[in-house]
Amino acid sequence: MKTLVLLRHGESEFNSQNRFTGWTDVNLSEKGIVEARAAGKALKENGFEFDMAYTSVLRRAIKTLWLALEEMDRMWLPIEHTWRLNEKHYGTLQGLNKSEMAAKYGEEQVLLWRRAYDVRPPLYDEADVLHLRNEARYKDVDNLIYLRGECLKDTVERVIPLWENEIAPAIKSGKRIIIAAHGNSLRAVVKYLEGMSDEAILKYNIPTGIPLLYELDDDLNVISSKYLADDEVLKAALDKVAGQGKAK
Image (cartoon, rainbow, N blue to C red):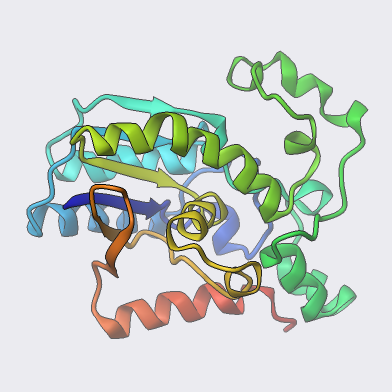
């Protein structure tokens, strides 16, 4: 049996303000730091060991991974950073308040922007994002749409090559891996692993800072999955994520 742990970053500053974040490189909130450390403690208490880690090139995910590994006394593990694990890019919505957008455009529209498989947010013009190609971390981005604004389908299309070419072969070879990333890049992994339909993924949420354990067979088919949290804590965390796009 193979194991894989997915960890959404702890609460970020924009999460705490209910803002669309996407590729905006914001820090963890104080609560997010606590969540990241708690994730590491839970992994340590449950006896998890890892051989390597993957994360995005955004600080909230990187810092979450660092803090979790620090709690496990495993900061020396090799870490692969890649833009392919970045959050879904929310285009011109980035930085805007989700509840205010729901009041303006309707909760259904905001739900589609946040969760739908093939609905893109309002996009940046190409000229507005070309400067990002000068950043070393984005020099090899192979499709400009990833920098302008994405639907989940776009996110899946950039995440799955990483999974198929690097992560899956590593797991099959016996490596124990943790992926610390973002709600939508991890939803892309979950959709792929579980063969989830486009409709089912719409309302599937991943809470911040709670490790999600997958047990896989030798062909990486899912045997089981569970969060390392009690039911009450998990429900509260999921309800919080689900309620972010409601008008207030």
